[in-house]
Image 1 (cartoon, rainbow, N blue to C red):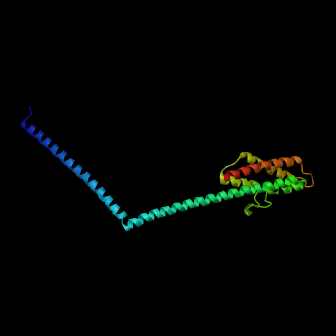
Image 2 (cartoon, one colour; image 1 turned 90 degrees about the vertical axis):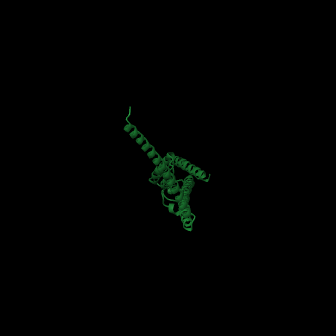
Image 3 (cartoon, rainbow, N blue to C red; image 1 turned 180 degrees about the vertical axis):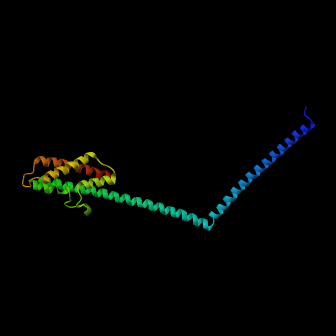
Length: 207
């Protein structure tokens, strides 16, 4: 049996817990209400500022400056792409121009001296498409295209190497000797292969 004092103490503790729970519940509800009201007040202030002359000016400045920056980046990218494409095409046409000169002259060459002159476009142009490429080696033109496109055909690289090696051999030959039909055939085969490759590249860009 509990004594009267203990019963009274237990009842007092129970009342205290109930009162404490009521107070905590009331405080929590008040806090939620304050947070809700604070959010409403904050958005009201933000809306008020944004709808003011200052807010409109601020938003306009942000969008205009952002739009201008985006336009400048896009324009720069476009101009860079166009300039790169022009340079690639110029290199390709310069190569085709040189190959045509070599083919035309090699077909008519009778002496080693004629062949030497016919192979001049390996190292410099006989009539450059662009003045900047007049004294540029044909292998450098191919390398420039590779730098601009990132595309390299190993088979074509070997043909360019063969062309340069045969050119060096002929340049070292006796200019008065007859031009070998074997050399003519091998050189024309290389030139025709390189020429067809460049024409295919040019046509693929048109499409």
